Image (tube, rainbow, N blue to C red; front, top):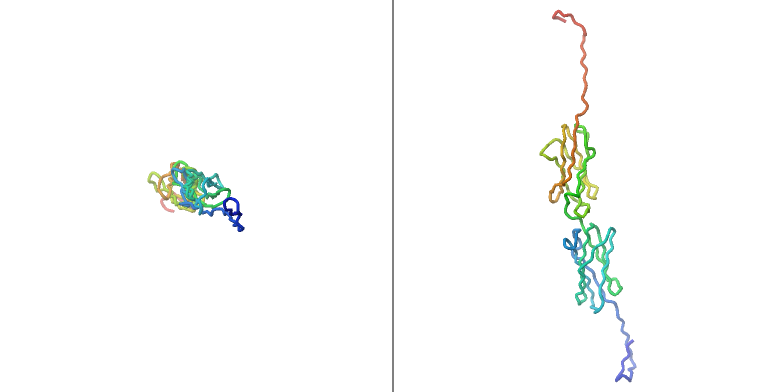
Length: 239
């Protein structure tokens, strides 16, 4: 309640009540989806905008994530009711960021960090079993696992599997994905021998360093029986 006085003595009969309300705010992430990596490689800029600038009070940004956390850096108070941060994460995940000002929450924003490009060393090609019968029916299930350089599984890719050394011994059929960076292929053959299976990612077509070796062995030898009737004949040139 404010009371007005004249010359510091005589008080006015009227009083006025003034209510101070916290500044309203809005938190925005631009962009809201970025590749997982260091702040130098990939980042999102978070901006908190308040409708009132309050000198001497700083904004605070916190991160909540299911796995690990998001990294917050480069905070700037622009002295006009606007506050900015750079955020990043090396883990592919959704991170929720919350901005507070003077203890009051002013806004939240979600940033999606996605896996980066395929890492040739961390990605794998594995065949199970490593030996099949060359009958066109027996098969080996070959799995390609795609990861980026931080070990994040690469989802929604279309990798390819092929024979190395320009051979053409097998039939390769893609069979699907588990949605978590693992892709499977059925491999059959009617030819005996040994082949090298090479995997590539579907975006950059780069070859995975690890290869799978598959052996095709002969099937069981079919047996036949020859019978003679009669079993005895005269040695006179006629039956």
